[in-house]
Image (cartoon, rainbow, N blue to C red):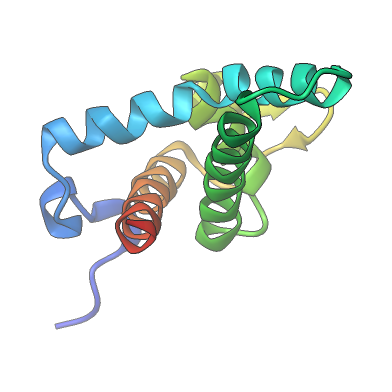
Length: 127
């Protein structure tokens, strides 16, 4: 029997529960907020106790970006947009900056599940 296609992999096969998926999803949806805090603090001349917060936010954002690149370097920007903005395939399928994505809807969602699996592993390794 051949290897199972990525698009057919389930959350259970990745070892991700429904609640863990929700946690990972919420983590990704904070990406733009964290990027905003990083930009604001970088522009601020005041340095306060928020430097540790900025470093943690920067680490989180880099982890999300790295998970997207590891998942698929060819579509990582589409994945990043989808998971950080909560956008479905239909909203990232064609992008005015990136152009048209070169994979179908089913494959995209398979890659997105793989992204969350990759991010899950990276977060567990970081602890």
